[in-house]
Image (cartoon, rainbow, N blue to C red):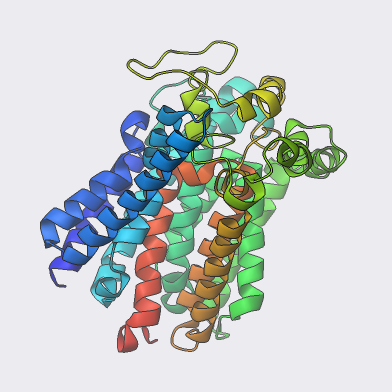
Length: 440
């Protein structure tokens, strides 16, 4: 490996450790720390230029909004630089320099070890929860947080969903070696079992749908051998465990989405207001958006001063100003309060990443992002003959992160997506730019 790949590998290992740590405040700047280290270690002029140009353009847009938009909340806009830091990392890193087989293999080997450790911790936590709840179903999954939360009581500060998203992303990258070489079977089984026991239904469902769609798009080849049959038989146990252990939680899926489509949840009302009511007061919003940090983003929520601890019992963040945009106050504030119902989860909340993209940045940019995702998937499919298993994993991983954007503001939670983003980036480089590196 050259200096770029060695620096990226070290940055990835530190990122994995921090993403699985209980240091949630530091987790927001993980991508910026990783990017800063990469630039210093490699002296990469390309990465530095990309980062500076991207940040400069973003700051110019914020400045223009601040001076020409009278109700603009500046501190929330500046917070979005941090909350969207995973995007800065992806934009700045020169992907072609990452195309080396040893880099991907080293990352996968490291991920396999972490998956096994975190999976075992998660299973122990589920067992501890079972001793107190008498069931593996319903709220028992809240006990499963891995090392993201250190403590015996369930953590309700998003640790459980972050465990599930990180575990899913790591399991996906282990699939090529498992399907081709029957490697990492133990970490995959342990991690998958822990994922099921975490009982984060939306992550499990979205991961499953992403796998099914990727299967149809890429169609990975699996030779009929005894070893492969054993692997498939072992993997088939996981859905059976999920159905039996999570019968009550899985049984709520149809009712939850039926209630959402009938307009009973804050999420549905937020979408209706944003699409039909907001443009009457802000005619340019569909075209240019309301601006970063001004509506449904996590930066906007943090900027209100009511995010940490929740609107009903907020915890003040030192040195952080408080304020909300008029658009947020008129169209989302009451829905956020409605979402504090103890029976509501992230599915019912009035914000998600796709809503943020459309409302804060405008329809043209949102469509541009969708077009970019489609172009990446098309290029992966075009190169699938080089390594169908890797193409399958990349496709499923990208779709999974896209689906997460429908659920919550996951794209502004680096601790939940940064591991997946870095794995996709290197896997994509290996497949598209690796030439012989990625061949079977």
